[in-house]
Image (cartoon, rainbow, N blue to C red):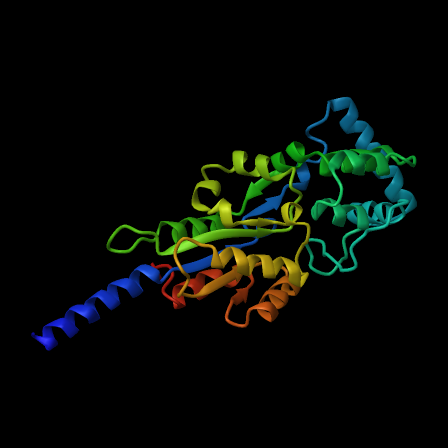
Length: 279
């Protein structure tokens, strides 16, 4: 028996097996990373008459209280007769401002949009605030106001399109988003060509579908389970891109080996690790 030949064959088989098992996972946040909210569309979905009413109502409110629309809106939400059942904080897009209880529970799926509407309309509000609320609490209307962040979406596509010599995908792209479950079908449909076809939705996580949200540890534990369920055992690196530092810190705390960073740093990080080309 030629032991040297056998050893060489076994070593070759081992290398092939390693190459098949090695798969990188790139995790993307959605809001603020792959998509962004177009505030100019706030009143555009309404009739000209309703639009004027909304602007006049907003102008009158701001004349009395010189705050931003977001501050007025959040203050109103915080004053609603509603208490959240969760004991952790979920943050607004700035990563600093806590979400009002009604928004937070909607995002983690504790209440539906219809239930939230009943709470909102339990007290009288200025017309412009009702317009803002209707805009944010209507899944289809909310999604229609989203536009893609071109540079980040290109990175997602580039990661997803990388293949090895056999034509197998080298990277698995999944989503980890604080997002109400009723929004997800509209997201998948609207961005079918730009995002959906490049993402493994089976292993993606939306807060409204799992009952918890970033930065709580529980959603990252679910993420770990999802990664372990991937068809290819992950022997490569895991990347997580989120525009909120508090979420990146929470992700790294749960998995010290996960590379967590702001999406602005994604091109250099992915290129440095050979996930995408430098070109």
